[in-house]
Structures are given as structure tokens and as C-alpha cells.
Length: 150
Image (cartoon, rainbow, N blue to C red; front, top):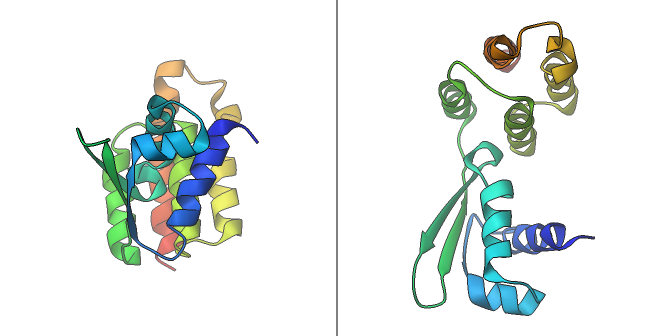
């Protein structure tokens, strides 16, 4: 397992039974034998709002970081996602939103797989690059609205 995966797994385990944790970046880095910037990288790439997390950082004193798991009801989360997508979305961000919805049991694995399949980069190869993320955003939002209102 690579270091980023180990850091993410450790943080995820800390959050297992809690909706919020506070960690000191330097202490966690020391425990894992890495530099604090590696912790920052994992937090900024894997603990994002699209994946259902809010990360707050306080400077000084060893770099205390609060990680909060966002919990919404179905309608609030749906509207938050639709609003955050805006006019463009790439495949990776689409995947992150779907993982978050499945995690919160607001979308089935099957529905998420179907939406991801429809929003896959392969489907947009024939389009000019500047239109791909625009069409994907529209398709993603419409599919979410349809599936989640059942």
C-alpha cells in the first residue's frame, strides 16, 4: 500500500464512529514517517466536499486540522450537488459525488454505476474538448434529479 493510501485509511478509520475529528498534522506525519505536506496532499485530494468532508486547518501549534463528515438529508444533498456542479464537471468530480451519495445510502450502487457509465470520458470523445464537461454536467444533473426523486 502506498503512503497516501495509508494516510487516507488511517484518517478514515479515525472517522469510523465519529462525524468529526481533530488531528495534529505534525504528530500524524511523525507516526507515519512522512512529511506534513504529505498529510496536506491527502486531505486536499481525498477529503473534499465532493466526497462529503469539510477540512479546516489552524496554523501554528503543530498544525491542528479538523475533519468533519458532512451529513445531509437526501433533498439537501441533492440540491447541494446540483448547485456545486454548475455548468461544467469532469469525470473525476462526477465519480467523487457518486461515491459520496452511495456512502450516505442516498443512491444505489447500480444507479451510481449507470450514471458514471453515462458520464464516462469515453462517451464524449467525439465532442470538442470545450463542450465535454458542459454536456456531462447537464447529463449528470438530470440523471441525479431523475434517479433521486423516485
